[in-house]
Length: 490
Image 1 (cartoon, rainbow, N blue to C red):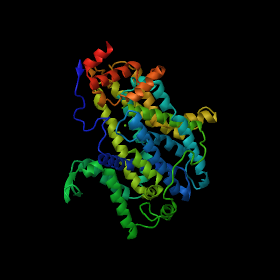
Image 2: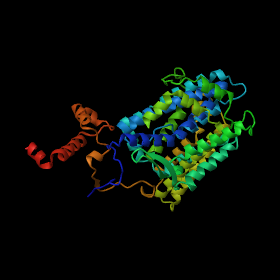
Image 3: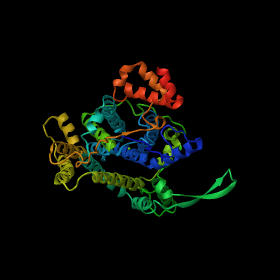
């Protein structure tokens, strides 16, 4: 049985090229929507380095590097990968690993602020090793095989524990100043209460040569951008009117902020090893490996040039780095709330009438909180320093502990079918999609190049030889007609 017409109501298909002005507007919108999420990790990471007065300058570098690498990753993925219209930025799945790192290397009065570079090299080197899993799982096809066994019963505890693991960071940021509560209230209002409210906005029409108004869901489309801009402006008003004391986390005139903004060059291209040659830490590498696996599992259940442009013009990064740190608390709280909501949304495909499923989910979440809490107090499991550091780091990550428990119990425990466990049933019919609308169909040039080296079609990331030939036949059929192709074959 074949089903046609899938996706006919889509405005743009994957191979369609919108008008240049539409490309600019769509890209700008996507960038503005995601830019607030890209700022959270640089803010958290720069504070973990304990760099003292250099924290803000480091934050500028990390923000610039984040924008450039996110832009490059987005371009590559949207052009050569799955080609989805999504932005590829830092994942919150790595925050628990960074939080564990912060516990092992806390910022105290005795901390040497000159050692921040060593910490950054440890983080970058360990992360570099851990993220090798992603291309390895993709090239070998392991992620496809593993995804058959990872269902909502496993994904829900992982995402819930990810949110629980960021609670200390949220509390630390929110407690800096009450302005973070205002940020949180605004974001909740925009996302929940005002999402569908259409606001008339005046624009000038060059075609009609007059000013007219258009109605748009500005609160639903740009909640984070509006929230940050409004609260940032409130902080500025409170600063110039001296309604908040000197040194407050909500002030916009910190000496370090102004100094960095003045001294940062207009153009600064991020480059590899900007913080020195990466170093390796076994415990941290294991922690990032666990986060990498969680990130891939999370994806089983996620505009470029503009981001690169902003990242290269480091004055913009320096300006963004002057956002009061207290504002980030409200942004992080709202972002993690959304992830937690997505976690619970996975429950709709699970049979919650089975005590088996409820027990596995509940047990994995409880143990995912209890076991890390115990090992944060206990040290010296085996007596070997390397093993203790590695095991201690892993066992402090509730996301890993709870996810592993849920996966093992869901895999070995009887009493439920795959459908009751939340797995999607494989369709028995074949979906026919126009080859020009098929996002997985490579260009004819690429297909001919692949067929010249047929051995590479055995890789899971490369289409099979039969699939490529079928796509080319469909293209020929559409271009010349079926009768001419049949006569040509004879």
